Amino acid sequence: MLRKVYKFYKAHMWAINGAGIGFLIGISFIILGILKTLFLALCIFIGYFIGRKFQKDKNFLKNLLDKIIPPSSYR
Image (cartoon, rainbow, N blue to C red; front, side, top):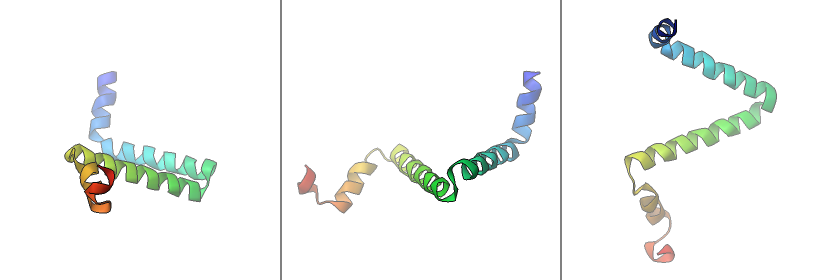
């Protein structure tokens, strides 16, 4: 039984994930309202972006701070 469910999920993974995300967004609109939901989505996107950059480049935060603040200011 579990193998059939897994096989079905593998065959329709993107459709199932998309439906689940759409459901969560719809529930968020109903419960939180549109502005709070959009703010939450923005925070999630920013967190994902920073996490992905940090995963690729371990010195990402140091390099970002070097661009914003001169190195002698915080070291």
